[in-house]
Image 1 (spheres, rainbow, N blue to C red):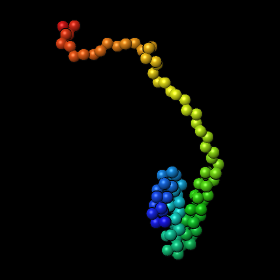
Image 2 (image 1 turned 180 degrees about the vertical axis):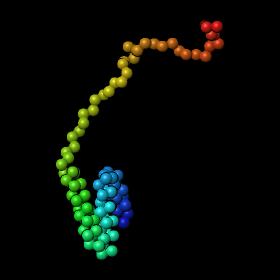
Image 3 (image 1 turned 90 degrees about the horizontal axis):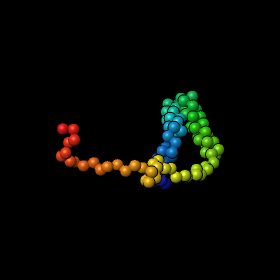
Length: 97
């Protein structure tokens, strides 16, 4: 369990950094409120964590992933329609002199 916990936290934080941040802030508020016996801060922290988790769950329930059709994109015209350019070389002949 100890080896899976950091991996789960990292993957959850990478997928949804904003909601994960709100959960962490709420948990810290709850811990500080519980240690200092400030029940208002403790309640606010628990409420924040609960709302963040509920909103995240609600967002995931409403999404249905549809596959996006992939079409080939051609950025250049076919090679037969492009003009042939002369090769550039390092010649010692200077026509303007």
